[in-house]
Length: 445
Image 1 (cartoon, rainbow, N blue to C red):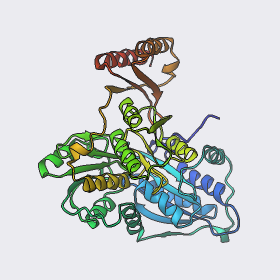
Image 2: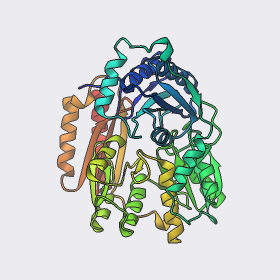
Image 3: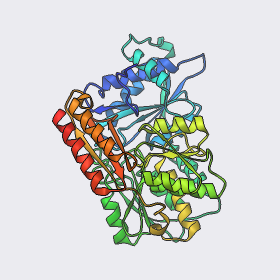
């Protein structure tokens, strides 16, 4: 069934455009609340947000929607997405809601929903909510409308949970760590957690003003982190995105380390310690072929899914894996969390750094990546991938790369973009293939 509102990661769009207005937020609250009001118990929803200006508009609209159908609301303020998932589960809530557009610019926003188990909603639940959004709401009687309250210690609860994932007895004393919080949801909790574990913290991106989230900082723009690491003499740098479910790392030389290398380090280390489950890890079709080869050398598997951390998590749960993620830095460690958590993944990397005694540049080069190139082509309408010229260009590229590399062409789930990725042992060939396909898509678009 075709989705009308939900994408690969909740509902997302330009603020005050049709998909992301105060009216729509209220309708989502009514619909999601009605779907999860089951039984006679007091129903509860936990709502968090990042630091976008539009959060001030969307939060009260969601509160109005949920309370109107009889749900009590717990507001936790600016908090990482994984914190909202964790709090929804620990508070025995029926639902968790995160107001965020993740790594997108401030002018976008989104609504992510989590079930009472802390996991993102199933396709069936999302489709049921979509139907209710367009239906006449069933409002609660006047004496059964919900209440709203704020919880002041939510940040402390999350910091405690994150620190609990760090090996007992280990400390970060003697390490200087730069942390870029993208002026987003983790701007308080991430530096605090590192400081409590003993690190010398160099904070970046911790002055949100409503419009500077992800603006030239964070995991999607790590240049400032790299420069800060080199200039401050930090041992390592961590970069989160706006809602802190992604992690990108910079070593002590300022070189960027992506999610593939981080997953490889965690998986191979956990395998040596007998902690890895499932015999490997789960990643998407975008992960580098070098990762697959490195894992195979250790007798470990790489299972690939469609792009989107929800699909990674589905395969992890069905196959009994406890490590999975995306090249972009979404890393899911299911022994500790129900969704991607950039800070928690960062602590696992820091634990390896402390235990190994190595420099970050030596520790984090786990495999030699195969040359890979990803380009995005923006389009204004239509279906470029169905154009005959594009199909022909893709077919020619697949024939050329056969046995020597891979090709992944897909539309973005969050933006009007066609993503064109190729990888192979011949870098020049990879570049030529991508350029030809992008030109065909641009012509068709």
